[in-house]
Image 1 (cartoon, protein in one colour):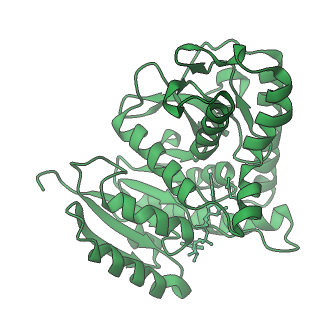
Image 2 (cartoon, rainbow, N blue to C red; image 1 turned 90 degrees about the vertical axis):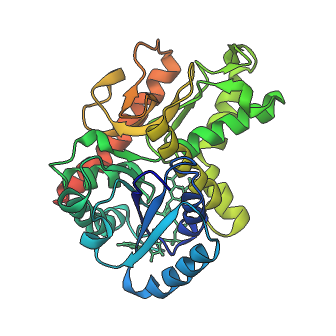
Length: 328
Ligand SMILES: NC(=O)C1=CN([C@@H]2O[C@H](COP(=O)(O)OP(=O)(O)OC[C@H]3O[C@@H](n4cnc5c(N)ncnc54)[C@H](O)[C@@H]3O)[C@@H](O)[C@H]2O)C=CC1
Ligand SMILES: O=C([O-])CC(=O)C(=O)O
């Protein structure tokens, strides 16, 4: 190992996404095959023993890139020196819980974690929020970290992006690798707007290959409600595909996106496409290895404008609810 290890903090490390994620981080898939990693696992006290078990298994893999593992329930220690933070641990919605209760419970997690990132993480910290409601949790964490640029707090829209590619590939019976410039605008929720307007299939416009009835009646709802369909089928929410999307997001952020393509990332709006500044919103993004850049200048159809607007309203309403709770 010649390079300095990169410190990666994973919260909710003992959960199901954590279990699908950690081995891939330690094997080099998050950052690349030449980058050693120090892994910090942040958990709540009841889950520390399970986290220790996962750490034992990580060690048993004898990954050449795995420099060290630290397990803690103290956010200040968990984010100490972190270069990458994957905020997976969140409070799930339980029976009878109102949306405000869920936002409040998660505010209690993501506010303090944002502050700990502010005070202890490395200067180049990059944060990906996976825990739901991901976009608003990212907003809460970012607001609690005034010394960290808002551009470093992102929310995971990549699973939605990958789901959209998969659905289109299946419909057209083409390899997923032929599909470029897929896009899912907005919120990681059922309001999201998966959009094939700019997508290409082997270089040709995807919009010419599918009809609007399929798009409206099948594609958009299938992608937007895929999380619920997985829960229905598996009896548990998506884990390996979520971990895979987190790997894709960070890998492209750090190593850059492919030429002539983009990915969907939930990033702080700069006002692009009429999305109010500051909302963490799914946009078409590229990276050259430093910051996410929102792709500019796309012409928007009426359907896309409506999809964007619906998600603005949904995210503004979450933001206002969180403000009312004093979390912003
Ligand atoms: N953005 C996206 O595309 C997706 C988001 N998710 C979300 O990811 C989150 C995690 O999912 P799973 O791993 O399946 O859940 P899980 O319940 O299996 O694991 C969550 C873990 O977080 C831990 N945790 C809770 N509070 C914590 C805190 N304050 N600090 C550190 N750890 C804490 C728990 O002890 C548990 O081990 C959920 O909110 C889920 O809805 C899931 C799939 C996709
Ligand atoms: O719906 C859930 O709870 C999990 C999730 O975010 C997804 O699979 O997209």
